Length: 177
Image (tube, rainbow, N blue to C red; front, side, top):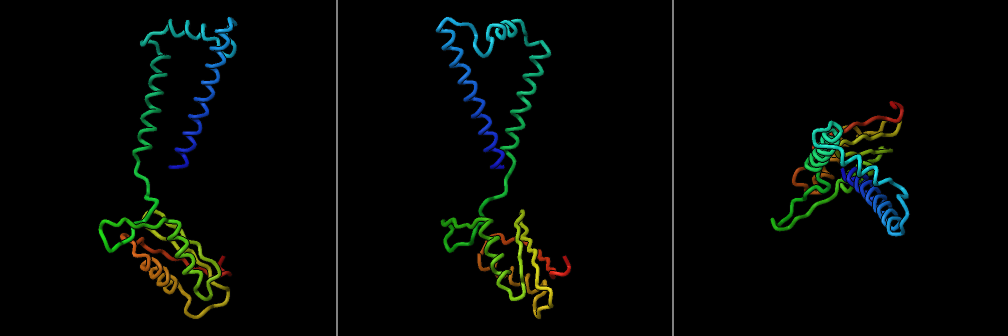
């Protein structure tokens, strides 16, 4: 959602700067005694003066603006996933947390340190931690889904998260893909 907010903010700023430049150019042209330069304000003013609140074009415009405002408000009220995962601390006044990215890197490193694992992809979505690991083509003794899940849970437990995520592990050999 943060990316969408930034894109909307950039678009709004571009629109405001554009209309500000148009307004400044038009004001300078009017003070200099020239007619409209970019936008014919007089015809726009005359067109708007002939419209009432009962006209369908006015009602549609007001309805679209209202709908757009409600959609933007609803998007801001939607609960987002927390960027930080809270960590249990010794003192209740202490607010300690780690980022989701740190959790992913920690688990990825722990799983990658297992002898026989060639690659580990880790993802956090909601309250679920997914580990997609690949082991070497030859069978390595002691490297199975349970071992990878145990290492993952141990790495998560060492972080002392208040709400540890559920762990899901998928282990394939290089030949299976």
